[in-house]
Image (cartoon, rainbow over all chains, first blue to last red; front, side, top):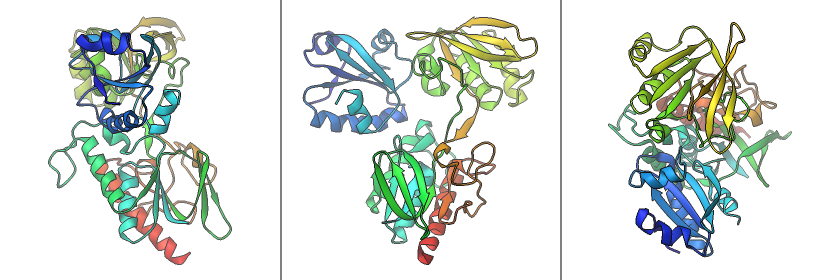
Length: 103
Length: 303
């Protein structure tokens, strides 16, 4: 599945109303560990079709970052039925992220 | 059987891999997190000779791709133990796997030292941070604290004082270890408060950090300090816990090895920030990497 880039405009439709669980990656261009995580998530998005992978650029979407209490990036949030069920910070190997996603 | 197993995929480990691969050796790199080590957190590297400016991420990725292109095998597993067999070779355990090898380059690096206070671990990413330049921007207009007395703590406090409402600098001694010039700059800031001879003894907060409790190191008196951000800058420690039973480490946990990178066990070589040394820089890490790799190759020759 393609990675969805989130903003204030599409957040409601893509996350809150999503039937699938959504893994949101809060990131920024200046953050090295975020850049490490990027390709790992792209790989996961190619393989997994029952979880939506989405990204929030925290510099362009400060409101969303604030709303989700982002205090360190990269931060991954797993959202089910519009509710955050778990979060984790820092770059990590693919196997760890799959585990975080409940795979 | 691998010729060389490199533990850690930071600059020291990747340099080792590159040198050993170019010497025709079969190399496995084991990494518990992601490649690159601490340099990934540095937005701009400007002191690596021959490269005017590069991001830490790009530098690390270049090294990683160079090692891969030369034939490095990489496994993302944390090494949990090393066994030395009678023949002089080794078995490394990592995750559910074990790997046999003739020699080892230990390049496990260093991690940020924690305060070791209850609640600290749980609130990482929820107010507790070890990198002011990475996370500071999320605390714009908020009350934050910095713990530590060295240059990093002073630099962090200066950086944060530009964004945050107030910055409380907490240090357990009555004087800072860091440069006087930096301290004086801080003293001029209206929004910076000093809490000297104070130790963080408790960290409060459920969903996110709400405050810390400080104890006066002289009188034992306690006080609460409400903050939303706590930046811990109390130094680093080597990531060598898994190896201390096998090889000699110093009181700080650093692997005892001279410039030749030989450890107390023949066949195991130490490179980079986890080794006993005075200067820990990108340049010294890659220098160690090459020295350790060639020493490992020489060891393989004889075994």
